[in-house]
Every structure is written in C-alpha cells, then in structure tokens.
Image 1 (cartoon, helix red, strand yellow):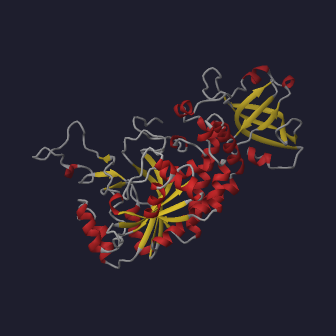
Image 2: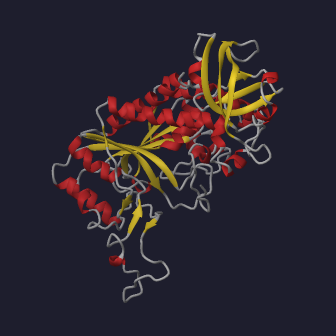
Image 3: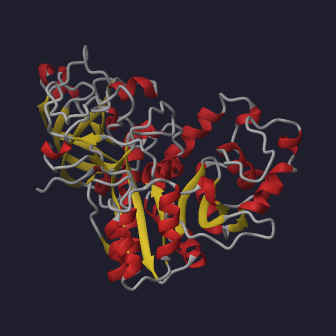
Length: 481
C-alpha cells in the first residue's frame, strides 16, 4: 500500500478503503484524536485511535511534533471540521518529540519567537502556508517567462562591479585578514587575492543580463543578491532574491506592459492554486487587524488586495504629475506626511507612494520619467523638459499596502551619453569596458526591470515583516542557521 499525502486523502471522496500515511502530530486529544499534518496542505487529517486496543506506552509517545506512520480505514468523518478521517489499525512512532523541550507547542507563538526557531517554524500553519505560497510564486515566475519566450540566465554571484553604484557591498576574499598583504602606500594588495582584484557579492544581475539580452533577445535572472546596508527594518534583508528580465528592442512603454502583465500573471496563479493557504492567511490578517486602531486598518482583505492588482489596469503617471498631486494633497498641506513634498526633485517615500495608490488613484500605479539625479547611471536620459529639468526613462510600479514593488528603466544605449554619465558619477570605464562594448557593437534600445521576490511574497501573504517570508533571514548581526 503506497503512502498518500494528507492533501490527497482530503481531496478523495472514496471512503472505506485502507490507507497509509506519515506525518507529524499537531495535537493528540482525549487519548483518541490525532491531528496529523505532513506539509502537503494547511489542513490536518484526523486519525481516530481506539485507545483500548493500543499499548499505553505507545500512546504516551504520541506527542506534538512526533513523526508517526499510520495505517487504517478512510471513512466519512463523524465530527465537525473534516469530511474524512482515518480509523487507525496500526500505528508506529518514527521519531519521538519530547513535550518538555519541543518549542512549537499548540498555542499562539510570537513571530519573534518563531524566528528564533526558524528551523521548526514551518510546522505552524502560518509559516507552512507562507512557504507553500513562496514556492508557488517561484514556479509561476519561471512559468510566465518560459511561456513568453524568455531564456533563463544565471548571472554571477561574485562580481567586480557595483551595478547600482550603491557601494554597500559584501567583500569576497580569501586573504588572511590578520595578515593582509600591503602595497607601499599601506593599501591592501588585492593582486595577491584569489581573483587578483577586489571582488564582492552581487547587488544585481542586471548589467550581465543586458549583455545576454543583446544577443538572445529576451532573458531573465532569478537569483540571490546581497546588500551590506545596515538597515534593521521590516523591509530590508542583507540577502534576498531578485527577478530581473531584460529585453532587446523594447522601450519604456513595452517595459511597463511587460511588468504589468507579469505581475498579474503570477498573482493570478496563486489565486487559482493556493486558495486554502490564502484563505487561512487572510483570516490571520483580519484577526491581526482587529487589534489595530481603525485608522490603521486596511480597507481591503488579503485576497481583495491581490484581486485589486489582477483586475485593475495600472495607472501610468509621470513623476512630475505625481509631485503636483502630492504637493496639493490634503496630507501634505496639513503636514500629515512625515516627509513634506515641497518641490520637484524630491525622492518619494513609501507614504507618498501608498497615498497615490490607495487614496488618490485607487489602483496600482506606474510612475515614470524620474529626475535623473535620483536614479542610476544606466537609465536612458530624456531631452530636458520645458523648464530645463533632466529626467530619465525610469519607472516604478506601486502596490497597495507596500509601495514600490518593481523598479525598471529603458537602458541608455548611446555610448557618448553613457560615458558622460559614468564620468560625472566617477564610475571607472575600465571596470565596465564590456558593458560599454554593447554600445559599440550593434547597440539598440533595450529595457528591463527588477523585482525583489520577498516583496512580492510579502504582498501575496499579507506578512508585514520581510524576515517572515524567507526561510532563514540574513539581517545585521544575524546569520543564524
């Protein structure tokens, strides 16, 4: 008899058949009812034990967290809450779990406590649901690009360039830090290092993806990226996953179309395939919202928020237009924003982004044509506007509850303009000679965007802390597990 999963058994109508199942005990009550879960679904299956026919010593070992193997008859359930249950014929304890020390007892645990036990937290309903959704979203990403003719490319994790010009990078070295080789001027002699030069963990695969787009046409990356930002917030990680498509012969309008279509597609996929997990997380969120003051509560439930993105056309608004809206908005005039918008050129904060989406337009928003001086060097420069202000062909997609979800741009394809921009920002041409080569040999309009995968998982699960949507979060002062 082959072992079935809980998900398979609960979806079967066929009863009065012998089945076998393995899983972990969630609860054992009245010496009779075992709630068993194997990770295949948010739901447990009830296993009913006739305790008079089982050895007492064996029953004592059925504790929360224990791994067991059950065979029995699948019958229609007598009790509430489940359609079928198993009448146990044989029961074997595969792995004991000491109830005195097992941390994940059947009671409410704080997320902080569960982070300290991240190796066991997926044995709770919330985290098993979150991680199944993460897995589904990941599959949906690959499915979308595969069906739309993209080639998947693995960009280097170790790199010599800083794609964002952010400077907040983790150094990679095999030099002995207690005995560094020095040059005459006292600086570190990186020629003696493994790669013969300074190297870092990547902050983005974009520049390398551009090189492949300029020969394969449509490519995307989906891999880990690293930022040595000392940000201890609920929105920052030092290690996270990025999705970055790059497409040749595509301008900013095409880039916006692609990003909108992509977001709608992956979110539609989980609406269809993760109903039970979403319903559970929605209920969890509603319970959490009840503890907040009315003003801080969300207008939409979790599933409504996801449908809001899937069902609405994204509104496209220029940065200049957005600044006018914000400057004249009530919260700005009444000084309710933490960051008051005074003039063109301000870098928008998440409170401004959320105002535009949730209050003003009431739909997802794509902002485009940002001031050149607040964006990266590789973004295509526009002609100055009527007031002589310089903007770039950049775009950000803003979502309800979370603010910026996607950042992208048409890339600067003109060699002379790109060189000027690099010079102004003190970016070494020799370091990026290969990137400049793309503009020498068959240059063309091309565009792409980046999406922090954990932001997407936060949005789809309703989790408010980014540490709770990645298996083992890496944050300042924390690299546990």
